[in-house]
Length: 330
Image 1: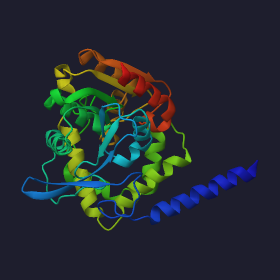
Image 2: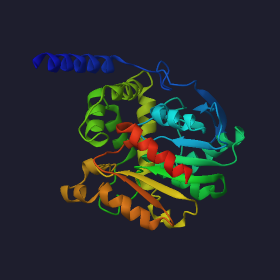
Image 3: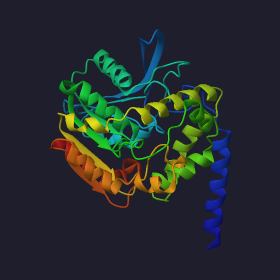
Image 4: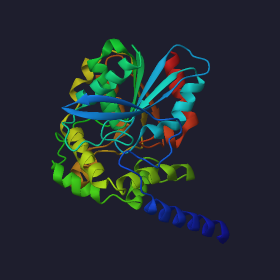
């Protein structure tokens, strides 16, 4: 009985050492994506920027396109299993890395807004000749997907949100404001250990599978590589955007078919780590938030996953993708 535990412990220690040693470039140079990364170069806010993205075309097209919007601590690559499921079902899949993230530019200055990121994505899709798409957003990508659907309803075939943040207004509930400088100092302290501890608790309900290790390695290598100051600075600006630009009050204005996929064990609430205990208890309750958001969004459909956390598409991919494809087929 001791031998398997010892072997697991050794593998865990080896992973920890490898994750600490990993260093990727400020645009994730050195980390392998599951499909080739292309770049959309464009001008924005008086500077030249480059947006990394994957464009995966199906062998047997069904005539539909799905656009995947990643979360704050995720990249386009973390959609790997979802891309495979959609591709096999006949979808063309576009998976971009937003500016400030992963394989995309980390500008020295940028006025981040969900409107700006939605506009950037719309420009990319226009260049690719995509007039209409299913917009799928996870975590922070759910806030962005909401904004995209509000700005471009005619180009949004369906809106799908997977454990989106922004189902509540944290500031209104008492989560204290944190300056960009404070976020920056916090982000500079990011390590493989802190990433894994947070993800294990929040994303996977205290469970861990070997396939999660590469995503910790990806983030830790990006945050500790030669461009770590740029990465941390852009991350701080993005956290400020998340905290100060709620989409919650505009759910009622959505006019596209919408489905919410919610892992009810999720407790994500950005900034709540500095909140008083009574505020911490009042935020991030996804077993309640999903139901409340579905009532606010006209005609929304709610699919809940019991005993699942912030990333159901990664925690139980087969179960999630069956539900996703069934929903898209309706």
